[in-house]
Structures are given as structure tokens and as C-alpha cells.
Image (cartoon, helix red, strand yellow):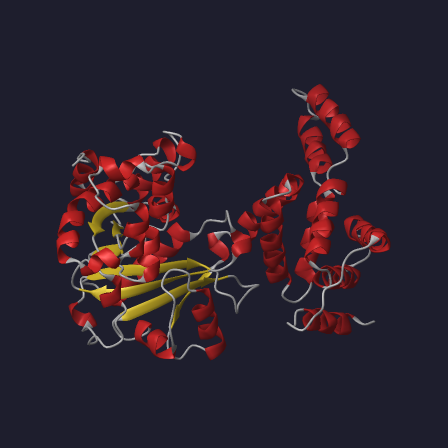
Length: 445
């Protein structure tokens, strides 16, 4: 079978009508032999390409349990040789302080390099090989939840992806209504914050008072890795329905002094742990400032997706904040139609949200990272918690996850680096004075 036909077979296996097969004992032995061939790495580029295509064909033809067995085989049987590592380590210890120390160090590094990476890197030789590996890791992350023996393979893949997807290799592109429809369709599919309802909705998000940027990798040119949607305004936006209103008049972008990042979506599950958000936002800010010199404020209008789940774990916080409704009633959102209840909830719910953002920690550890994933992202990229917005998202999703509350994170170009360093080194959360006061004033009714 020629390499071209192998690639064609690989592409056909990606089709939705493919029927996956289980991996039986005989199949495991054939797979083990394939993996050993790839680990040995014999032959030239053409041989490596053919081996990788055959292995990818095998993987894509398996059912879910078979794919998990495939990955487990690599994780458990293709690590470094313990005897070679021990011998190289002993040689290094003996060589420390001598002229042979650096040669011994190089030999130790070689001994510790696992065959797992040699197997995985061969997929780079086939078309869409990098995308294949990213999707493979997405599978791996699912299996990892119940099979910790796969952790060693995940760590090696994550480390390799951090090198391959270094921000220096990525390309920032502005997407417009003239962008190919195939790519715009993917944006609709990947939008994870505020679902794109229609082509008209998408066109509104690409109008003259909006900008949409995405990062691409040269080996995945048709797949956005992360994208950010921006609204150009003259104020700090505090309601997402108003921001997404298709019928609202188009704002004159010449009058804009504020850029609102209202949706930031990571599109590739397999790249979890690979961070390029900070670099993306800095590049976007630079691009916006070049096109609109009057812009001097850069902020988000962000969801607070884990507020309700935190309250389920800490129900006493509702009474401490003086909130008269149950968690279920808050999440239902029917109270928003009662003007008196809206008045009674505004202050205590805002204070509770401030407390959550200031002190709720992942794992319940006082020195742990913030409980809220969106907060972790923005604080980890150098933002400041600027303002809380009551009834800012009145969608069913908005009530279910945060009772309609949203938050503005501010990206001050002069403070991003210092905020980022303080958060990374000591966990210090940058907050405006107003939000910090609210966090300190949670009192019982």
C-alpha cells in the first residue's frame, strides 16, 4: 500500500460513518509489534511516515475501550529502561567534577528519554498529524479521570505540546465576515461562553464595532486554538444581553475608548495545560491600539461559572450574606421578575460574589488557586477584578451558574506584568478598591 493510499485511508477513518472495532488479544499483539517498530525508528523519512500512518489508522479504527488500551500500552511498556537509567546515573555520579561530567550528563538524558515520545513524534510526519495528537490527548484526558496509570503519558505529551505550541510559533489573525465559511462554522461550534445562535448573530459579532481574533499553529492552519471576541464601546459594559443584541445600533468605533473582551474560548481540549492566553491578549491589545489610538481601557465582561457549585459546597454562605432565597430559587431566576426581591438581593448577592472571587480557593486550601476557572485564567494573565455586575446575564445559563452575576476584569497594560508576577509568586489577587471593600463587608442580615 502506498503512502498516499495510507493517508487516504486515514482520512476516511475520520469520517462519521466509521464503525470502531474492539481490541482483542490478537489485536493487542499486532499493536504491540507496531509500537515496537515505531519505537525502534528504523529506516528513513518515508518509512517513518508509513509507520505513523498505519499506527494512526489502527488507533482511529478502534472503539473507545480499544483506544484506552492502545494508550495504556504505550504508557506502561515504552518508558525508559530502568537498568540503562541506573547505569547512566551511576556513571554520571562518578564523573561529577571531572572532564567527563558533561558527556555523562548527556548520556543520562539519553537514557531517560522514553520510547513514548519517539512513538508520538512520528505522527508529525503525516498530514494533520499534530491535530491527530491533540485529539488523541483529548481522549487521554477522559481516560485519565479513572485510570491514573496513564498520567505518565499525559505528562510527556503536555511537556511536548508546551514546546510545540510555544507562543513564538503561533500566528494571530483577525477574522472577519469575509473569512472562509468553513472557519466561521468552527467558531460557531467552538464558542464556549456565549453560544452563537445564528449566522446573523455571528455577523453582528463581526461588525465594524467588533473585532474577533484567533491564534493558529502553522501545522493546524484550519483550526483556531483560542479566540477572543471584542466589542468597541465608550463605557465599561455591564450586561451581556445588551452587548450581544443583534438589533442594537452599530457603535461608531471612532468614538471608542474601551475594548471589552466578552468571550475568550479555548477550542482544543487536548491542549489543556498549554497556556497562551496572556500572550494572545497582549497581542490583541497591541493590534487594537494600533487601529484605534483613543483606546485606553481594556476589560472583560466575564461569566462566573463556578459560583453556584461553590455555594452547593458552602451553603452557609447564603445565610452569612443575608440572602433570603434558597440556592435552587436563586438558580431558577424567577425572582428577577419580582422588583422587590431584586431590590433585596442586589447588595447581598453582590457582596457574596465579591467574597467568592476574593477568597474561594480550589481544594479548599487557603493558599490554593481561585476556585473559579475564569478567575484563574484572567488573574493568571495579569488582570484585575474591576467591577461586579448584578443581573448582567439573565439567560437560563447565567442564572444557573452565577444567578445573573458577571464580572469585569481589567487589563491595564502598565500593570499586567506586576499583577501576573504577584499572582504567580504569592497568589495575590489584584482587585479594585470597591470590590475589595465589598468582599470585606459580608454581613448577616
